[in-house]
Amino acid sequence: MYVSRVVRPRRSRNLRSIGICAAIAVGASLGVLAPAAMAAPANDHFADRAPLTGPLPIEVSESNAGATAEEGGEFIALRGFAAHHSLWWEWEAPTSEVVAVGACGSEMPTVVGVFTGDEFPPQALSADFNTGGPECSSQVIFNAVAGTVYDIGADGESFYIPGTERPSGEWTIKLRIAALPPPPNDAFAAATPLSEQVWELPGGERQLLGAASGYNWGATTEPGEPLATAGAGASIWFRWTPRESGRAIISTAPGYETDESLAVYAGGALASLVPIGSSDQRGSPISFAAEADREYRIAVDGVAPPGGEPWMGNVHLTVGEFLAPGPGTTVERPISQDPADPGAAPAAAAPTVSQRPDKPQARTASHRSGKATKSAKKRCAVHSKRHKACSAGARFEASARHRRHHAAG
Image (tube, rainbow, N blue to C red):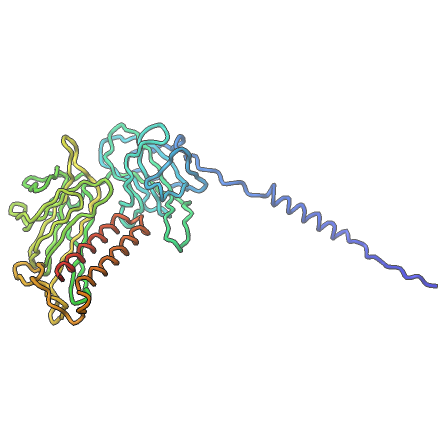
């Protein structure tokens, strides 16, 4: 009689060895071989700010990877956009002069702030955001006083448009401190020309839009310069020669903590300028009937408080002109009935083919204007980083619509 027996395979010593090695590898990956957490930069906190010395310009390049935001009220420039990976430096001004502190050329959008004081949080000196032009996402300009120690903070920017990838805010920050040269258009003879473009509007109308930017830091007043406004001696000049006649509106885009005056003159020589209009109120426009091929000069100056220094900062100038329709163009309403004033409203707007008897054209246009204005405000809210320029454009669009609607009925 035969009895069957189950033969069990013997376990391989090799398999056992493989299992032991795998366990060791896993343990090593979790322990000994695990990468250490990235150490924060030495100047991560305000108390550990790194000194910056030497003649201007001073340039440093440093990564903010692993840096953190310090608790207790830290803010860098616009506190809503800081990525919370800040670095800190300190710099003592050797002389009194206008300087620019910026992170131009950094590998990411940045925010920069300049402060004073030894205690945290420091006292904000200036938080002028996005003033370095298209090549510089953040820059602060101020009058440095000899012997004063300034605290400088820089961080990555966390602003992003919904639907796009949120930036990490960690990269290399290139900080630069340099003396700011006088404005290139300080002198009347070096006035900056306004760039312009003509837009064809629905209904046959045309509109010219122009703009120019600059700053009046370190600007002066030259002998013989008119003072038609409350300017205090920090003026810069722009020039514009319209190619066509029309009703023009010139204004400065109001920003945070700006206090500037505006004046418009006709003529190309300082001694023979003819005043056209002036404004001492922030962002208040000047409207006038512009003549084709006549040169206009625009002066922007800083307003000074009693016994104080004039305001100095960045200037954004805009010009809009309502033009007559082109040759052979049929429009829904006449542009003007007064040859002396091409921008004047007609006495009575004639009915048009598109006008419905049960719904006046002016009312329909007003409804469209309201919807467009709400849309412009919504865009400015979404793109709040560019709130200053966005709001100025929205105001100009609303002003243009108002004039057209007023003339229509």
